[in-house]
Image 1 (tube, helix red, strand yellow):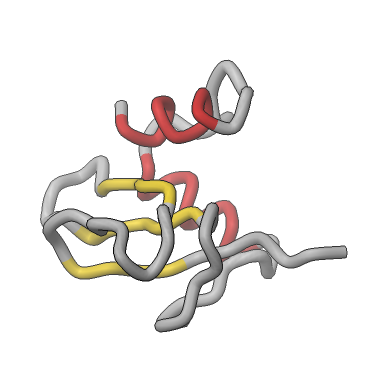
Image 2: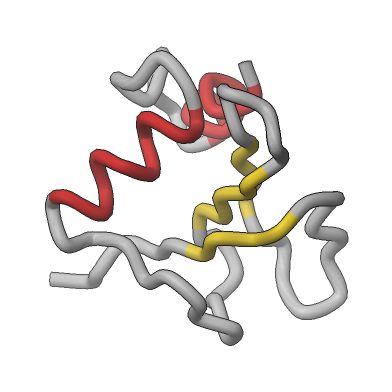
Length: 80
Protein backbone atom coordinates (compact mmCIF):
# COMPACT_ATOMS: atom_id res chain seq x y z
CA UNK A 1 0.00 0.00 0.00
CA UNK A 2 2.80 2.47 0.79
CA UNK A 3 4.40 1.68 -2.58
CA UNK A 4 1.18 2.72 -4.31
CA UNK A 5 0.96 5.90 -2.21
CA UNK A 6 4.52 6.88 -3.17
CA UNK A 7 3.77 6.20 -6.86
CA UNK A 8 0.70 8.44 -6.63
CA UNK A 9 2.80 11.20 -5.07
CA UNK A 10 4.86 11.12 -8.28
CA UNK A 11 1.73 11.28 -10.44
CA UNK A 12 1.36 7.58 -11.28
CA UNK A 13 -1.70 5.45 -10.59
CA UNK A 14 0.57 2.72 -9.14
CA UNK A 15 4.18 1.56 -9.28
CA UNK A 16 3.52 -1.47 -11.44
CA UNK A 17 4.48 -3.78 -8.57
CA UNK A 18 2.27 -5.51 -6.02
CA UNK A 19 4.50 -4.64 -3.05
CA UNK A 20 7.41 -2.40 -2.14
CA UNK A 21 9.67 -5.48 -1.97
CA UNK A 22 8.62 -6.48 -5.50
CA UNK A 23 9.27 -2.91 -6.69
CA UNK A 24 12.72 -2.95 -5.06
CA UNK A 25 13.56 -6.29 -6.68
CA UNK A 26 12.45 -4.94 -10.07
CA UNK A 27 14.68 -1.86 -9.69
CA UNK A 28 17.65 -4.00 -8.61
CA UNK A 29 17.15 -6.29 -11.62
CA UNK A 30 17.05 -3.28 -13.95
CA UNK A 31 20.22 -1.79 -12.47
CA UNK A 32 18.32 1.27 -11.19
CA UNK A 33 18.80 0.70 -7.45
CA UNK A 34 21.55 2.07 -5.23
CA UNK A 35 21.70 -0.30 -2.24
CA UNK A 36 23.40 1.23 0.79
CA UNK A 37 23.53 4.76 -0.66
CA UNK A 38 23.59 6.98 2.43
CA UNK A 39 23.27 10.28 0.56
CA UNK A 40 20.00 10.15 -1.37
CA UNK A 41 18.82 13.35 -3.02
CA UNK A 42 15.45 14.85 -2.06
CA UNK A 43 12.71 13.03 -3.94
CA UNK A 44 14.57 9.70 -4.00
CA UNK A 45 12.59 6.54 -3.42
CA UNK A 46 13.58 4.76 -0.21
CA UNK A 47 12.74 1.11 0.33
CA UNK A 48 12.69 -0.57 3.73
CA UNK A 49 13.10 -4.11 4.93
CA UNK A 50 10.33 -4.05 7.53
CA UNK A 51 10.42 -7.76 8.28
CA UNK A 52 7.01 -8.06 6.60
CA UNK A 53 6.42 -9.64 3.17
CA UNK A 54 5.41 -6.34 1.55
CA UNK A 55 8.31 -4.20 2.82
CA UNK A 56 8.01 -0.43 2.84
CA UNK A 57 8.58 2.55 0.55
CA UNK A 58 8.92 6.27 1.18
CA UNK A 59 9.83 9.39 -0.72
CA UNK A 60 12.86 11.13 0.78
CA UNK A 61 12.01 14.71 1.80
CA UNK A 62 15.62 15.76 2.37
CA UNK A 63 18.23 15.57 5.12
CA UNK A 64 15.80 16.66 7.81
CA UNK A 65 12.96 14.45 6.53
CA UNK A 66 11.83 11.54 8.66
CA UNK A 67 12.55 8.23 7.02
CA UNK A 68 10.40 5.99 9.20
CA UNK A 69 11.21 2.74 10.99
CA UNK A 70 12.95 -0.30 9.58
CA UNK A 71 16.25 -1.06 7.91
CA UNK A 72 16.60 1.12 4.82
CA UNK A 73 17.47 -0.23 1.39
CA UNK A 74 18.01 2.99 -0.54
CA UNK A 75 17.27 3.40 -4.19
CA UNK A 76 17.26 6.38 -6.44
CA UNK A 77 16.61 6.33 -10.13
CA UNK A 78 19.58 7.12 -12.29
CA UNK A 79 19.41 10.37 -14.18
CA UNK A 80 19.80 9.86 -17.90
